[in-house]
Image: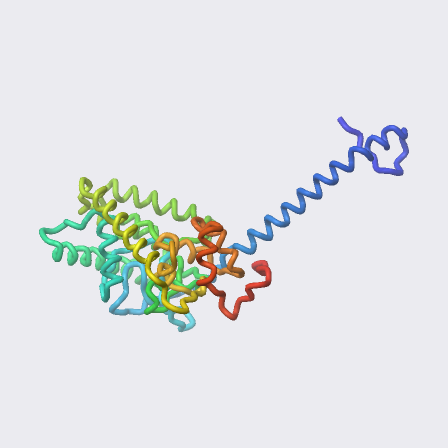
Length: 330
């Protein structure tokens, strides 16, 4: 047990002298600890995602193009937004181009339903039917006014349509993304972030993955049509083709003057950059906003070497000062 006395207290000189000698290292250690703590907090604040805004009393706006995970809403104040769900990915319902077709093929391989019917054409149409079920389920669940939590982060995939990412909860408080995954109508895939309840993006993704595993085990929804013997080969083929495509993109000359803003570039635009596939593009989107280009080093998969290759092709927009530190979130 130590007796702590400050200089000036009464007591033997030996005790005071000993305390003075011991106080220096203790004070120095405490000072270093506080500095480290402050720096850590500042970094966490700088990298924190934008605050979510709660929009209550939202209603669906009927459209011809809506999917289970992407749809138009109207807020209680009359504003309209196209919402893209965090964390869940439904089969493409409306295929209007090569990008959509490739994505549907990738989804079919993921679920192991490429050969669900006698020929390729019939299998594709069957996948679209399953996608239509997800769209119908979303309409059913959101038939009554619902709540959206969003930071208005840009959720465009191919740049043709303005979308924002959001968490959607039905009139009973159920998470729509989790419901679709549990029903076997979506896979746990895509952009994630911290939830309205404070759960980290990684934890939210893990929860959805567990729900997906449960749905697959019980053969619910799309999983009822999975060819489990063929699934490993289908997924391997998708990975092989993705690597081949990646090599072709990385080896091709980039368009003259290509410069992207990491805060606003679409997923497909980011995938034009060297070494950026769909997964890494989603991670870049998850970490938005970026105050400085060096913040990209916090993205899992972007190290110093990759950053040096990307830096000449990136530029922050005029509304963000790339030279000033990030402001703490309010």
